Length: 174
Image 1: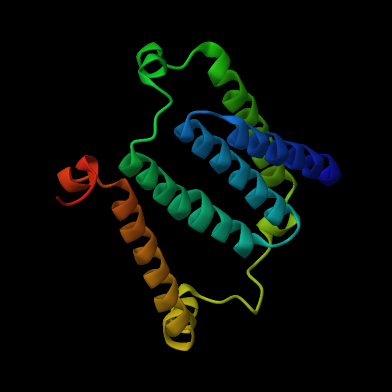
Image 2: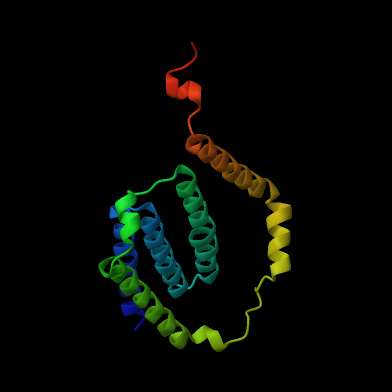
């Protein structure tokens, strides 16, 4: 049964990623990419890496996708006014609903089939306090470097997305 779940999740990840690449609307692409990240998180969980699965959901499907949406809003990317006025049709909802239904079904199957769910925590369990201590004491420099990278990305997106000044529109100084 786990093999079938793996193949279903792999197909969902591939289809969702293909849909993310081929969509014209950037917000739709982000939604499909989130769907793909959830499928990958379930694959990691199925392969016995629950911490990596949690990071996949928290970091990629959460923080990075919020950053992508922030950049899309700052750059004011849109496919056109006609698509905005019409709204999404039923055919646009169908792929998302199918992929989401497959993810929900696989999640419920994994919850029922997981033999480790009823066992006690192993001896090597790290508490959130231990994890936080290691992250912010032993790896503090790496955390700061990543935070600066995200800051630089946000400043760069602001610079790229700002409206052009009068001098730039008229062709420079006179």
